[in-house]
Length: 302
Image (cartoon, rainbow, N blue to C red):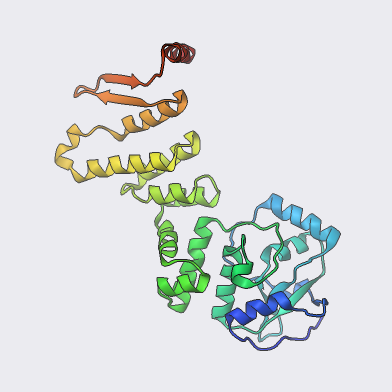
């Protein structure tokens, strides 16, 4: 189904603002969904199946309420710029036509808008003046970092320029890009939401990738805190910086045991190791009755 094209691009802010305000009459331009080409450079790489199915069910009942933003291409087709989840959910629902807003734009504007649409979901009005649907998912930290890197690599932006384009601070952009230096297994844990961005940043402090991966598994299995990860990283760095004193520095294993026992017992635990490998275990208690309770905990461990 042919559609009337909108006016030429008028800059990023105008483009975003107009998308919110049109169509002013309350009528949407509609396109056959088959005329719309997905954006291969879409920043979002992972789409949660359950959330997509719920959105699809909503679309099947109510239709697509928020128009997709598309860009007309030279071959007569239209490329999706914003609204990838709605597009996918509409296909799942068997929808054949969808409401769209058509805008001419440059490659740079397309990339920036696609990233902004995903980055600023909680308070989109402050950045895009759009009234957006509420059933939205945030980009994971790795997707966000890759999206920013794409802007830098494709258009030659500095980190400062990229930060201005996406409405973030230079420090936030720098910290985001550092996540791309994570080992692949840890990167996948961030993608899957199994470890937080705070944990990921702390894991970057490990010079040994294998050690970082081992601690990442502690985060997943034992739920150790960001502070615990920072403590383990600091301990590993001290050992690395003083190779001549390595024998006097204890194995990071004992720090991990302290953290695991402290978490299990709900109190501070210290491990003291002698030269021969033997040692003592110091466990905090707060009263006689608390000590009795602790004793029973140890009995139950047998």
